[in-house]
Image 1 (tube, rainbow, N blue to C red):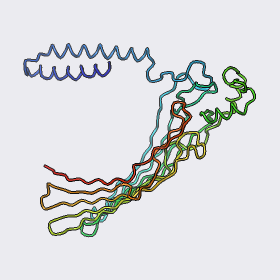
Image 2: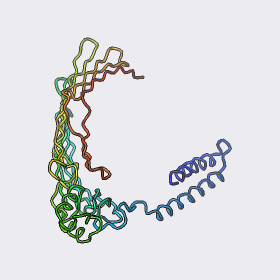
Image 3: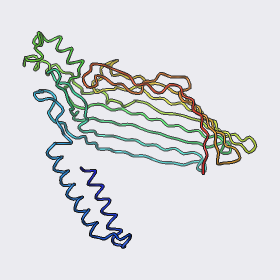
Image 4: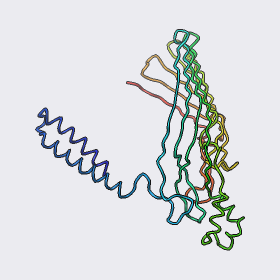
Length: 319
């Protein structure tokens, strides 16, 4: 409904502009009518969102005792400072930036002591800080360009906050006597002991935040008569990180990887044509890009790998 309201708003503005200029027989009355339709749809959309609770929709099933019935929005207070610099007659560029993020209400998927009850919850406070540097240098009479960038970051969950995931919940159910004989489904003593023994995330690393990552590349343009050949070699490094807030050893630790890429481009005298060859992941590195643990309560963990070695040739024409 909101999309329809926006469409009517755009059409109304267009009609009013055309009507003001008496273009194509369009009158101002048509624009005003469409504007009224927009206002009606916007109000209806707002009321529908208020009734449905969109933005804090309950995800945990009724009866959950640890996972709240609604989750809060996320907020971030971001502080950044940087510097952009040029040296040596603009052949050397060095840019730096430092940042600090005060993250409030980081959302994550939590599990309740009662089986099959889970939903979105919020980490109260998260602190993230880091440093980024990028540089570019053009030398050898503009034939050689060196580029590089590096980013170092760290973040942690701040304050005592107890929560459960599927693995820790299963371990507690198996170790607490009150949870035996199906007690996890009906015994309040089982649930209360699980809540009391739930892991504390205080001091855990922020998920999906590599400590170190960066890349370097060197590109050289050689002249062969009227032909130009650009050759570039690149190395990319992505450091390790924790996939979830639980920081559960090997289950959450995603290792780093390095990747080499090559690129060649031939530009003939007719500058409208270019021929290029790109080889990504030259040594076929099996780097893990991301990890998925217990999606939708399946109890499974899977890894998403970076693409394998790829060789792509291109003939391009610009006009």
